[in-house]
Image (cartoon, rainbow, N blue to C red):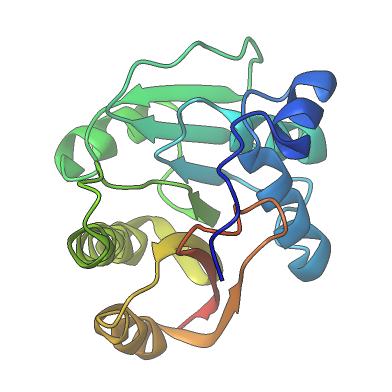
Length: 200
């Protein structure tokens, strides 16, 4: 059976435009939120790999001005002009620089960390998947520092045979791991989201 044709402007793309979201990934986070209720008013939330900003838009709609939202991305991103959103253009591997920036806004740890980050792809599924695993292992290290005890973490993961290299360290750090492929993910995509609940 042949794969479905790749459609750039599918219903999620068009609906994102209609609702003012910067990308279809907004609907992925909305479905995760509907199922797990991770984002709550008053939370301080860190979003890693935030460009172009659709996760930020969803988080902001839920918490409004009741908590702080920080994004980290090595890419330049068009700002969202709200007083409780703080932008850090930096690599997640630059821990000392991130700590210095967070000290300026009086945040040491977060209630929730989300990530929609993906590696630069090569078109080779095995290579791209393992790069995704390596990137998410780095994010686990970031969460070790910046996520509160019993806090939650959302990761985007490219699924392939090496995924257990990520599953094992997650299970050592979090009480529960749930996996979900939101409806807004493309059918031909290997991506899933790992919802890591209750940091130990």
